[in-house]
Image 1 (cartoon, rainbow, N blue to C red):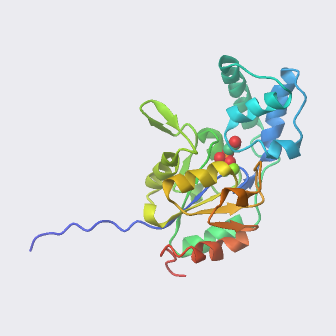
Image 2 (image 1 turned 135 degrees about the horizontal axis):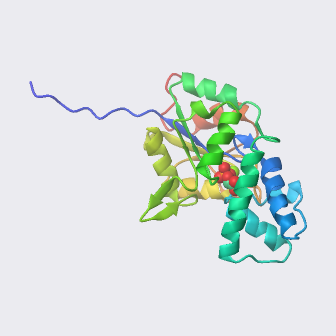
Image 3 (image 1 turned 45 degrees about the vertical axis):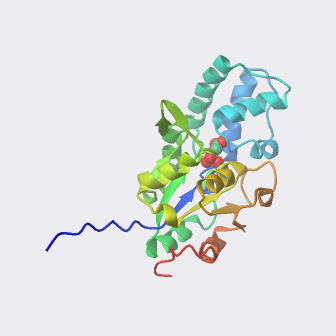
Length: 241
Ligand SMILES: O=C(O)COP(=O)(O)O
Ligand SMILES: [Mg+2]
């Protein structure tokens, strides 16, 4: 009898954004930014203003800090400041950061139903891993991918490029057709929409406009609502539900 090759059945997957979605990190992010701004003799950014600036990565955060003071920063200087910012951030990685309520129970519930998890963030991969380890959940994710994880033709690939998301799903061994993105910013929502992947927005993260403006498929105000939100997407992935 000829052997037939059977395609592996990949598990459904939840892909989480990190800052403002899985974890409240603004205190450490903005604290690090303000050290850099102070050295440049620029007024510190308040936590409230800073929460609207996070989402596109550290370089964008620094640029916004400069912009808020009516200043611009040239690309070479930005690169130097970004390295300083990273060193600063790594030195205080989870001093003021914590998981949002319900994250662990939510992962437990989805995992018991056969789901896999990944993180797709615009943070750099190293500090992302460091943070998730510090918060005790790094081992829950099949892949933790940051702005420097993937390169195509020598160019880094990061959100909102949809390939950042699809490559993360691939790396975690999840099913592209049964994937859901969970994020807090327009960057996440646009990334998922461009990849043709349903997206659940959290409304408690970092954004410069209410998340409904960006038309996510669902909006949740607490992780306790994620199960129902994902189930209502009817993507045929609720194994064991
Ligand atoms: O730190 C940032 O600016 C972005 O990080 P996030 O993609 O995890 O929200
Ligand atoms: Mg975010």
